[in-house]
Image (cartoon, rainbow, N blue to C red; front, side, top):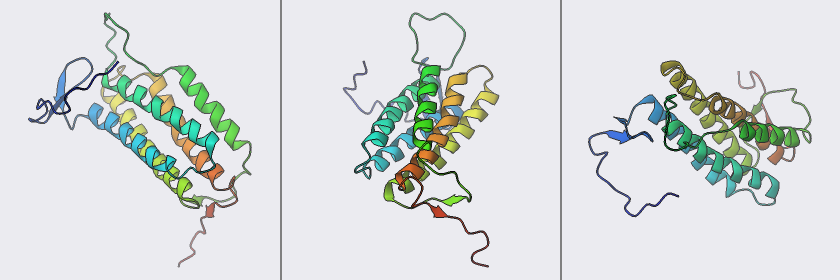
Length: 192
């Protein structure tokens, strides 16, 4: 259980922050940038959910994803070391990835296949989900860079979850656009 009695600590005034291990790193460290971007995805999803009237199924899915994103941030905040610990750090699991895949499949079953790329838009909810999708792609790119820089210190499940997340958000945006009927189609070269 997290208890926050005091919000400011002054420990970051010199531009450093603590990882879950207690190690202090620069606030521009790629690990901090990565879990900060995951937090940004979560914030965009919070905004998206404000526009989810009559979308109870998708809203419940987004609520689970928001919770998962805190788990994912905690996972990233505590680099894998292979050393024995007195406690088990919170990690993303394959079950969370599997659930996300099942939810993608459930939503996608109701949508006609695409025959064009689509533009972010349609309903307000769909537009915000597309925004979250682009931020999640950035989080994934940063996570891959982190995994390359710190080999073995990012779990496979984290990388898989972030990869599936952008897929989920794309499908959910289409589903929220009247199951794809209100998608805004790209017209190549329309303004030449």
